[in-house]
Image (cartoon, rainbow, N blue to C red):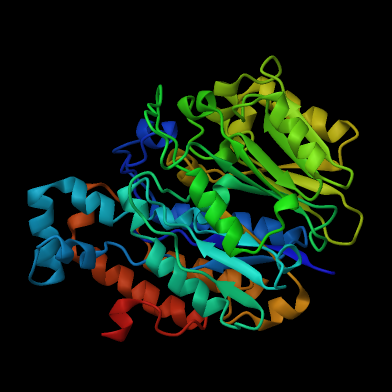
Length: 446
């Protein structure tokens, strides 16, 4: 079947800030309280999308969530106008306002797990929005994310958009950030790999450092919902060593595309046995590259986000690939040397491109975090609703929209500014017109 991978990037929202809310994410904690620049963050994200388009790789966008989420604060007993609710919540505990103002939905790799129609027994493309139960600020995203996906992937004859999995306890689902796929090409049946950190019901489990976020049972549930062939589905445990070093998601230490996988040798709990299992599960020729600790130490790979990259196939059928890395890789001689060896060797990767997304990186999200990979046939692309597939004209409109609506400076204290609510709603109201999505936000339907 002929199909292409489309990168759905999350548009950075107007309340992008450095709240330091993500325990286990070293960069998020390091930059807590830093003054942010929402305008620069959004433009950097759009520039990365433009970069993909210039390579001929299909690119789409997902709209930001409305923040601050005053509805959640009302659920907590705060009342009155939106401004009064924000002010009262700030006085009670500023952390509440920081959590409900997070623009973390920009990291679309956590939005959902997606299985292409060629992998599913029913021939549908399956989407399961992540419940993101491990972090309060992220758990607020799942309902609106599901609503957006049902708006875009509306055609039930082609798409199945499931409910997010139940939340509670350790039943966390982190979406595509803990999911990989290997296949001869995007349009051929592949092997789907779910990487988990623990069992939701694991008695006596005590992490040595940071707590894992993805539950084995959640991964199993997604595989069942997506009607995947058990013979082409793997469940592999993420190494606690990697989690403790700051690999809060698997995509911080591993990336795959087509028949190629790059991963640190300490990415998986069972080490080389995990890499052997991956190669055995594939009935097609693969290139599984395990980067040794001596080549790039685990902590250094995480610091520069070597693996949190975009590995993408150029269109045209040659199978050649480009590796899109954050600029921070240049600060690591070992990581940079490894990347340069890749393109000079026998791997299908023949080009390195560096992206400046420092606003996202300071908050702990690299190129891979910003995008959700969706393999679509031409008929499936034609069935998408709204104007979410990018072209040069749409990118230009979005850049102008950002420049008109976004602030270039935001502190934690600014989150309680009532004007920020109105600015955000004005921006989002205009955006739904640009993207032709209709009244998807609650404020538009009141």
